[in-house]
Each structure stands twice: as C-alpha cells, then as structure tokens.
Length: 479
Image (cartoon, rainbow, N blue to C red; front, side, top):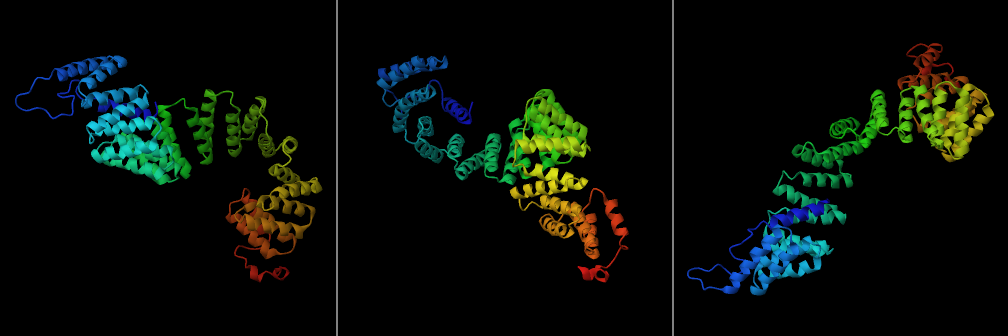
C-alpha cells in the first residue's frame, strides 16, 4: 500500500470514529428544557442507526441508502452527510463524494472533518490545488492534526516541490517528534537534493524510533555510501544484513565497498555468499575477478573472468581485464591474445592499445609496433598521463632519450604523484647525462612509494651519496 493510500485509510478511519449513534445527527443545537416530540427526527435517528449497522458489516450500499433517508428527513444532518461522503471516497465514487462533503461543510463550515474529507476527495479526484487549499484550511482549524500535513507533503513530493514537502514534514515532526515515517521521508528528500548530512541526520532519527526498519537502515547506508564514507556505509549494510540475510543487493554492495576499502578477503567472502544466492550471475563473477585482481590473486581472477566467458558473456572490458590478469600472472602470450581480442571487439578501446603497447615496450620487443599502439591510444585520449608515460618508455627502449624525456615530462605534469613515471623520467635524464635531474626524480619516486623501492635505491647509491646537492653536480651544466 502506498503512503498516500495508507494515510487516506488512516485519516478516514480516525475521522469516522465518532459515536455510531451521536446525540444529535443534526447541526441544530441541543434543546434545553422541555423538548417537543419530532417524529421525523426520531425516524432519522433510526435510519442513522441502521446505516451504522450496515457500515459496520461492510454493507456499504445499504448503509448509503439509510444515510440518504436520514437527510431526506433532516436536511441539516451533518453526520449523515459526512458518512455518505466518506463512504463514497472509500468506494472510489469521488465526484459524488465531493458533492456530499461540500454539503456537510455548508452545514458546519468550521468542521475539521468536513474540510479534511472534502480536501481528500479533491485529492483522489486529481485536483491537487483544491486539495492543498483544503488541507491548509484543515490545519488552520486544527493546527495539531498531522494528516493534512502528511498528505500535503505527499503532493509536494510528487510535484518535486521538495522545499514545500520538507516544510510540511517539519510541521509533522514538530507536532509529533516520534513520527518515524516523517523523518524517513525527509531523509529521502534530502538524499534527492544531495544534502547528505541532513539525510543522515533524518534517517538516524527514524532509526532511533524504529531500530528494526530495514528501509531506513538501507537508506542510511546509501546516504553514507553516496557521501564516500565507505566504512560507515559498510557498518550500516552489515546491520541491514541481519534483517535481510538473503538480500542480494546488500551482499553485492558490501562486496563492492569492501573492495574499495582494500578489504579483499571480506570482499571475496561477500561475493561468494552472493554466488550462493545467484550461482549463474556473470556480473558477480566479473566483480569477483576484479576483486581478486586487485588482491593480486591472479589465478583466481583469471578463473572468475573465465566463468563469465563460460556463461556466454563477452565484452571488450572483460577481455581487457583477462589480458591484465594474464600479464600480471606472467603469461605474456595469453595476455597479448586477450588484448588483441579486446581491440578487435572494440577498435576504440584506448586502454587496450596502451596496455599492449606498454607490454611490448617493457619487454623490449616489437618496439615500432609498441609506438604505433600507444600513439593510437593517445588519439582517443591525448592528455592521458599514463599513455604518455608508455610512449616515453617506448622511446626510451628505442634509445631515443630526448623524445622519451619530452613525453615523460608531460606525463609527470599530468600525474605528478605517480612513482613509475618519476622513475622512468629519472632514467631518461640519466641517459641524457642530466644526473642531478635524474637523482631528483628517483628521490621523488621513492617518496611516492614505488613497487620496487630497492631498484630505485640502487640507482641512487650508484650515482652519489645521500644528501647530494644537485647544484654542486658537475654534470648540472648539461641540464
């Protein structure tokens, strides 16, 4: 049941909890002293009682017939008009309900129930402006009633008038701070508006009131997720999993977040649990392969990616990832095969051109082809620092050190914090006799945390002592 239908049902139920047999079904004031016997009014009262009986037994057509007889005998019978209008709303006879509720309001213009139900009839008829005006009037009459604010908020939300919706929900929680659903709805709107700190605060309020709410828990996890607060998002998704252990979306998101947080073992565990729920999902195997690749478990990464292929799924991204896994597993030929397949499937895959070209350059083979491959990648992404590093390294391997330094300098400008680029640039400077510059680049590479720091230290130790002053370098003039 939607929020609107729930609110309508609850609102109608509350409004109809007047006594089945009111002291007076008319708007006339109660008589004092000796009362003249009025047979029409007594008969009207009898019909009202019958109508209440039929309504209680859900015999709505019979109830409507009896309430109409009441009004035939007593045209000022407010309760009967209200009952007819509310029953017609419940029966989706909206236009008829408007007529009867307007009549009830004419009898008692300041009745909250009449104003609210008439606004609700307009709402169900799709006349939202009239409904909003009615709800505002209902809250003027009875400021402490929540239903008009809640239904107004639902209208504003559907219209994407989020500030107005938030204002209505704020009115609700001001009246009733324990209204968990209002806090939850506010959190959803704040999320939509990308006001994530406010969304988090609202969802936390909702969860403080209803700790077992899976919806609110997941919404809070998502708000942290969107904020980039991975560890807090993980914590909330883990809590949500207690209430929904079979929820595949939670397992999938946890696997991704563990992966992003560098918690490879937990990521693999989460994805393996997900595979128990969805054993034939190629997407899960692909994600598992990516996690294993980052964890440097290359045989497991290859196995997971091949599971994707075995299920008939193929893409240049999958082939690229397989190529990368084979290369890191030191299977050069298989890596070449899959990079070539990726390029064949998508001739615009710049990353595949670059990776294959860099592999040749690093190995010192097919260098002319390496240059052509890397230049092809740069046609698609001319300012890609990693590709410029590959180009510079290919030139270096050919002994064209000027061209190497030129491209490696551009790469270092684009990605100044990459230790590999700094190491390569240091090598190029060294070959050009620019020793002080070479040393500076190698030292910077060490600061940035290279994969093989001992290799760089050996270069530095072979060309000077720690604390070497570049300005005193006899080769500095060649810079």
